[in-house]
Length: 69
Image (cartoon, rainbow, N blue to C red; front, side, top):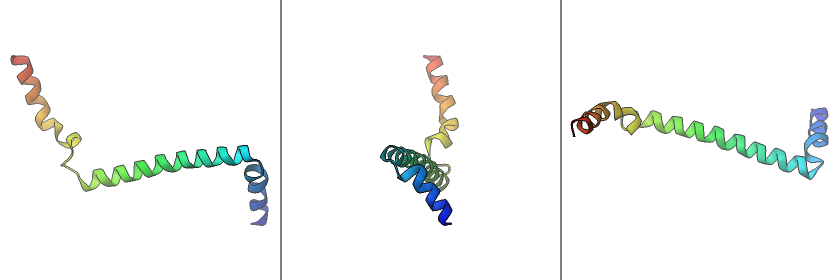
């Protein structure tokens, strides 16, 4: 355990530039993961209520109306 902590310190936390790069990279990865997770939960809760779930019901009618005009 102490060897792993020492390696992390030597490779990441010792220099400010690598620490900042690791922080920015970690924040980016966290943001992407959190966004995908919450988007999936939201879609699951609102299944059948969102436009992407019901547009097949209304999309064809509007296309046919435009073609008639």
